[in-house]
Image (cartoon, rainbow, N blue to C red):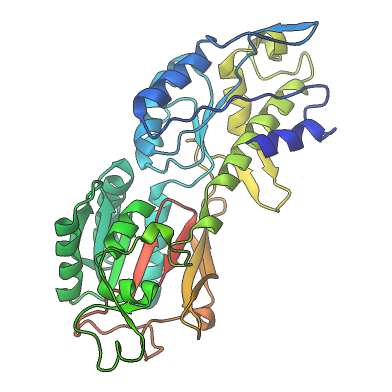
Length: 401
């Protein structure tokens, strides 16, 4: 956020003679703190300050960027919507937020789960995967995604679910062990995951092959000669949090860019509003909004119509429900000869205008975790736990391993 505002304030063509400021709150992943911070901003109960001799008092809050969790954002938007203050989320993907009656001032720069599910179904159809497993987090993100996936699969005739499991938030080794055993016993060779990083870490802690590969150890009984040649035994107490590996590294998938786009969206909306020509405005009597008497709903009007291209070449605009145009990168975990792994882009799914989502895959780049390079998987043999995990962790990326 700070970087985006720094750029905007230095740009003579965007909001000239206007200086943007910001205040950052840490919600501490706690709903109560998120609500208190939002109400403090929306109600104007902010500390006063003096920037220049002619600029004294509480600064007007023009918009809120956040929150990351769908559950928190639903609560925040329900309250902030009463003030008609624009709120732009960078990470909340629940389809339930696509409701202008309940959330009249909500926007987001990350696509809805509805599009995530459609993108995933396109991949399933492309490879002919009709028998898959499903794992979801126990929150609005995961549960809504599960319902949408099951409904869309049924309507499209694109496949069936071998199993559907909810991943617990709390540390629950027996629960995760049961799920891993279910995956091993299932004849499904593809597992779809709608969850968060913490769920994947806890799931991987129960997968022996992943553990041995990550820590370069072997569980007892080890292969013949393993210990004699200097190999170590796994204890199960190794800590994944201390491991640097591309399998767990999501630094390239973080939501910072969505925050960047959210700040710029608010700035462009404000810029469009200030460029309004008196007598030709969009409001009653062809009025323009007045900056010193700005009503939040007036900025919502301009935010709904905003359309611009970032310095990275990405188009930003919102549909009638405040949703961003969906664009997903398809990422693949590639195992290198030295045993390490890296994440590479192997395609994308995007939607433009009134067209359906379009899938583009570079199949020659895809690494498959089995000897045969064919992707039309049989459904008769038991799967390696890491054969294929199609992972959706709330980012604008679809990952396969």
